[in-house]
Length: 326
Image 1: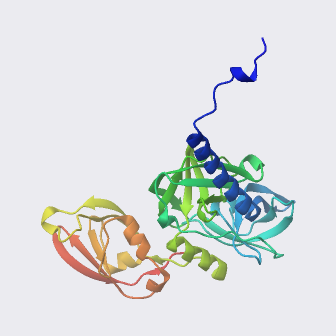
Image 2: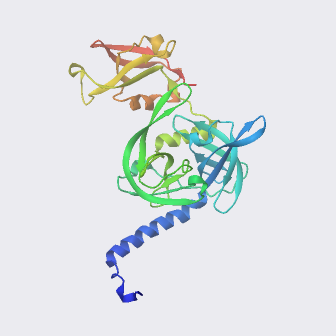
Image 3: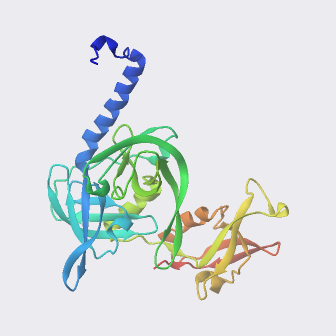
């Protein structure tokens, strides 16, 4: 049976149609602005028999003169190299300039310039429910665009290097579809500014991105300048726990309990023991492991640091000298 035009449902409410059109316009605008800055990566690894494929993913152009930002896990070893392909068909060889597994970020460098750089935003300004657009190369399908919202802010993601583990904090959770190959691609706000680097697929409708904020900007700058990120090292493993009621003062209600002390480490030499409760470092309260991680900057390497702690209910201050995390 044929159907005439008059048999179709009536048009949607004009206000709803306008809202849908506005949504589409935003996504299209972001895609047109940002897609030229997002590359598809083919990572190669050297072997005795020559170069062999080692992985794939996405990257975002940082500067016109050849710097690209991606995920550390995409490029693997810092000796790897490969090719970056842009949506206009241009292909560039790249070398891994530096990688930081503890933030899951890496910086690449191409031989030629002329890249269309993306604008970096500030993830600290995001709000739950805000529109975000993901651009990457899932399953090798270059220039793929998906859209969704910020589902949650402040997620944590564990990261590891050969010697240490760390928590990447303030991770962005989104329902914009991410798939294998999306890692290293851009998560952008409605103005096309990159607010995150897509890093993991935790489930259907559950993607995670490393935020672009003041802390990660410092990491990116260090990778561009030195090829590595210097961090101070204490040599302890610990976790959060509530402070005993009699030890609470001000707003601090939790601390870090030392679970393990690495033999020969700065903490070991200073006399820190398992079951000690770390309250503050250099006068800054340490309510969570993340608080201590933020303090472990390069400036502390080789400098005396005061650690305020509780041992069997007794307050104690110790001085230690952090070394560099290798």
